[in-house]
Length: 279
Image (cartoon, rainbow, N blue to C red; front, side, top):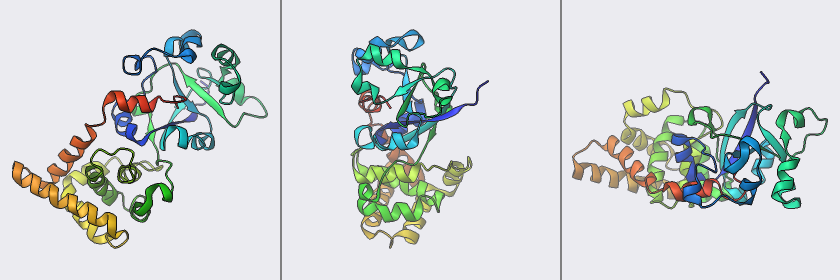
């Protein structure tokens, strides 16, 4: 079997929670939400015909070049180069859909060349199950994160337990603004390039998200006073909500997070996920 190769899918951060749960679905599977398949889907051949594809970039650098177009969400997985089709992304602008697909060839053939195109895009002919994906650090700059950047920098890689707890408060504080800085900061704290220890979430639940978040705000509050105050307000509001509903504060943190994420409708999020070049 050929050695598998990592590819990089770029999407809106709002899609990451759904991808974490459901994986990447093909264009055909989403046709009821996104409407009729387009000319590119219609021109694809063989197993890739009729929108049975998920697309990505071979190079992380090429993927990052499309952040302004596709979003800062970064998902990686491995493909079999003998079974994936590929072509330079630049050909989409230069050729009609039929000619573009005619120019594709197995990824293994491109990799055998001395000069692999820097903008090579890769297509697989089936959805990618969640367990085979890695959600990476969102490709966000300090400018993207604004006043939240110091908090993300201080916590995201250095203290994963605190980051996970503060992520929940940030999701709640976003109030469903999935394109705003607060939700972007939540995503930056939720996912990093280094995968979390499988015991992290159980540790958070055992330690109580309310208590962990409170301790994290006490420890990191001075790093970013404005964002810390926003998160404290949400922590207080969540405790009040828990008391009103007769549930534990830690459980209330999780429930309120889920209530916000439920606002990401499948159709809207996946439309973002497959917008533009479906990467």
